Length: 528
Image (cartoon, rainbow, N blue to C red; front, side, top):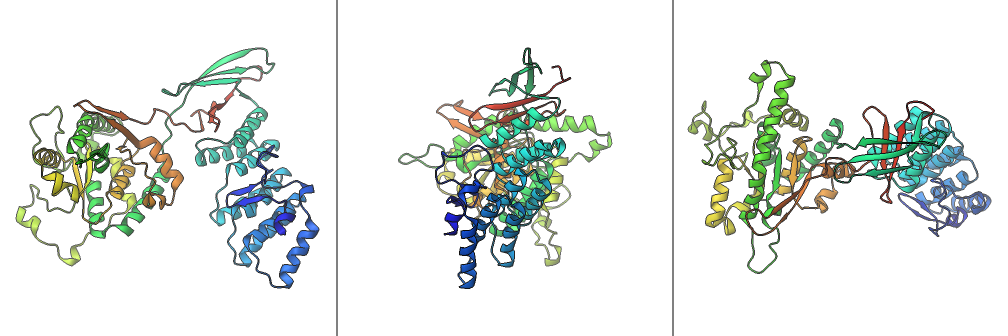
């Protein structure tokens, strides 16, 4: 009954939608706040009072319906008060509970009230959808609060890669109202390079001018990268052997950053779906061979960049790669040096330490303090890192079965001697290892894998939006065919397909979910 009194709509956790989706899509507030003549406040109150009198169980949906009724009646404060009652009722609120009040406040241009609702949503860890961002942008634009409006736009750009019709329209209305800005008549985007060319009319709409822009790659911020790595690290430590994963983290701190990481299982099993097929080491080596030269070049660039920005003392602080046996004679395809072990937990020797000493077990009180994710990030950010790609393989892939073949042993021996192999231990999930290393290795690291990363393990990550954003910039997909050169690598484009502004705040480019772009530019004077 309350459902019918509140407008008779279908509700979901993320919002409120009309029973007939084709009706009434004129504004972002329509879905959350029904029209006044669609609700029945008196009957809704009668139903609610009956439930209270007869101790009928009340749910989140009960209060959501009441909040919608109050919002439709033009009473956002009362709607907000209804939503706040859930806490005293020990009920968990959802976005649909608070959305009516937020939209109603925005409709009345009461931004103080809208901010109160935003704070309540943040308290409960509830994220805004595009409709809520659209309502806030519209309200702030109507009030001429340009600075707060742009802050809201930037928050929306962080939350959504592509804007819905409602959100893009709200942004267009904002730029049409903002002094000194124009919405471009048309815009063409080169999907290969990210170069843009837009046509914009002057204030009189009698003359046009062509503007050129360049979309850029948008990486995770330092804070977002740290947050994502912390989430991956937490899940990894909960699921992997503590000793093994800690050993891996220490290995990464010494060796990282890694410019290219290869999901060995994914490459080795590519197209192995026929009778008598199995793990193909040649396929993995094909990928590694293609990556050796760019990996060395990437390290050389990092060394040169550090030398150009630091004093001569930084040369003394340069962290060398871990020492290892000499590499094969073919220097054109093999790295110069690297870790000579395939597991961070294997015994190591060094010039200052005898093999006997290396094999002595540590006393219990000599256990090193576990490294933090922040320490790993700091180390990878300050080091020149590895000069070769690294393939991650589970221990079962390197022992027995296909690994006993002559060609397989040649590949494994070469990778070990070149510091190109990391072996995850028995009982582990190698995905956690290469994912952690790839995120820790920074903006210039690439993971070669066709894995869509949609299985249960990846779904447990605490920041799915950050993970998706990271994948867009760092995952390299591939296609293989027969022959030594039968490999195609598909790197991310040189620009990010997402809402972004010029570094000098001279333009905004916003992709829309219909495939088009909204472009707005700052004009030098009002006559343009």
